[in-house]
Length: 107
Image (cartoon, rainbow, N blue to C red; front, top):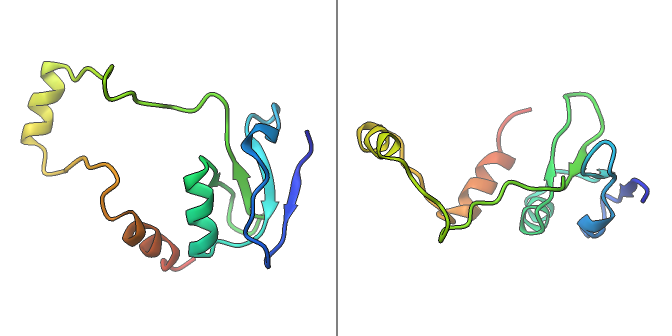
């Protein structure tokens, strides 16, 4: 397992199975944060995480947090909290618009 340097011209990612064990999930560095690259990354369970001024680092840690809908239990207190909350929880809603919004934010 070795760290892969991404090209700005090719948005392909290496397989997440090749991510480093230490630090857990570090997969690649470089590339850019273009909408096409972010979409490709998120669809493969890969995400950017880095500090301003540092190279872009791409991660896919193992294990990942996964919620299985058929096994998920929402407690009564959480249901009450959710009913009173001004926030909504949605899944796969306006994904493209969210990615575009994130890409368009100032640095």
